[in-house]
Amino acid sequence: MTGTNDPTNDEMLVETDVSDGLSAAESSVTDDAETVIESKDINVWYGDDHALTDISMEIPENSVTAMIGPSGCGKSTFLRCINRMNDLIDVARVEGDLTLRGKNVYDDDVDPVALRRRVGMVFQKPNPFPKSIYDNVVYGLKIQGIDGDYDQIVEDSLKRAALWDEVKDRLHESGLDLSGGQQQRLCIARAIATDPEVLLMDEPASALDPVATSQIEDLVEELAEDYTVVIVTHNMQQAARISDKTAVFLTGGELVEFDDTQKIFENPESQRVEDYITGKFG
Amino acid sequence: MSTDDLEADLTRNTENAPRELLTRSFFFLCAALSVVTTISIVGLLITEASKFFSLTAPLMGVAGETANLVDFLTGTTWQIHSKEFGVMALISATLMVTIGSAIIALPLGVATAIYLSEYASPQARSILKPALEILAGVPTVVYGFFALIYITPALRVVFPNIGTFNMLSASIVVGIMIIPMVASISEDAMSAVPDELRQAGYGMGATKFDVSTGIVVPAALSGIFSSFILALSRAIGETMAVTVAAGAQAKFLNPLNPASYLEGALPMTAAMVQLLTGDITGGGLAYRSLFAIGLVLFVITLIMNIISDFVARRYREVY
Image (cartoon, rainbow over all chains, first blue to last red; front, side, top):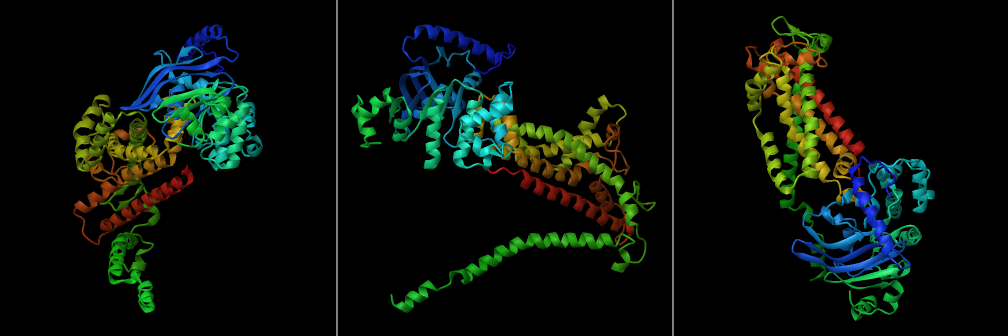
């Protein structure tokens, strides 16, 4: 939640709607893990290019859901549907329903800005702002008008992102002076500082060296205790190591199989998925 | 291939082949031309200006009338006929045009750049960009006439006692003239901000306004400052428009007093035009004062360039 109750902020009005949907969803779900995100027949076009076809899946709460598949299979595109980042691309068109706690995020009354405040995102390339480490972490708090003990939030967020010990003595130096792996952990700290419900990660370790990658992986597993994490990766071992559920996208923008990670890697239903996982293709 | 042939092949020294030498010298001469020109102009300014001052004139072997350096730099009366050469009267007018045009052009130019870089649809851009380029291409004498014939009468509606020649209309028109410069250089700087930073902002739930003002503008700050300095240098050196619009009567005005802008004055550049087109004779004191003003103008723009360079280095962000 954004942690503010300012009723004059009209972005909050939409959030109230979303919360109404939340109670409806709560009563209907009977599974042990609650569904946070549910997509039904999501289709995406970039101009005439049909990038995703009829994607349906349910993403459970406080878990890691991995999306794997070859380049250009649409896994990142799907991730960007969840927080409507595709809205920023002029030629992108999304059809279908995608609900966050029962509220369709593509309803006309949903403000993408309010949505993105509840669904944080970490990008493929570390992208800290050209500001100090401290200002990077508090950026979201400031723009979202969240009050609080910023020093404490900065410390907590950096600790959770496993970066505190390395930067605690230079919080006011530029975030750009950090190494690539540190920058990415800073971006994670920045994303979790505002305490979003869902954390989307778009190949967060693909630009990093093996040591930094393993740090990020440990971090993702820890974060899943409190957040619903959806992670795109092209690294199958990574998906197998850290995820609870895995979605396999294959060329052509279709979701071929979505199941528990163990099942996907040990005994997939689809021959295409088995071929992909065993490296026969892709 | 024999060993000797191989040796000859490997050591044929293409770098000093006649064609290479010729092209290298040609390009060097082209590049050297601008350096030589600059040095000659500065040298001319300094030698001629030093004939003007009583302090240095004897060194140059100049007899006759000279002016006092301190009186020149601190004096506030510019009257050629009564031999009063107080350059502050001219500097104050130049400063007024600079301040006035900055107040107009800097905010408008940056706002235009933000719109073009962050908000404009491709269609809006395709109209606005060429319009700005046309604005930059209008001959400056036309701007001067525009100020005299349209802006001043329009200002007279609000300020009935405004002079026919006044600093306000000169400042406005120079401001309009330098908007394209601020806008296009600032927009280049904003467009160079990596898209990843915008994505990061939007991903945090930032609005377009948050991203433009909180991420893009700070990241492009060095380029925006450079555009300011370059545009202000242009305002300081602007000649034709102020010659037409600002008036021909040198007068020391307080640039910080808004009421001064309703009066006319003589900026440095306009004073130089007046000296050149008037009936002064070569070799006289008035003639040599031309070079003294030119030198002051040169020093001011040189300082602006140095500041611009320093700012660009100091605030440059490497992504």
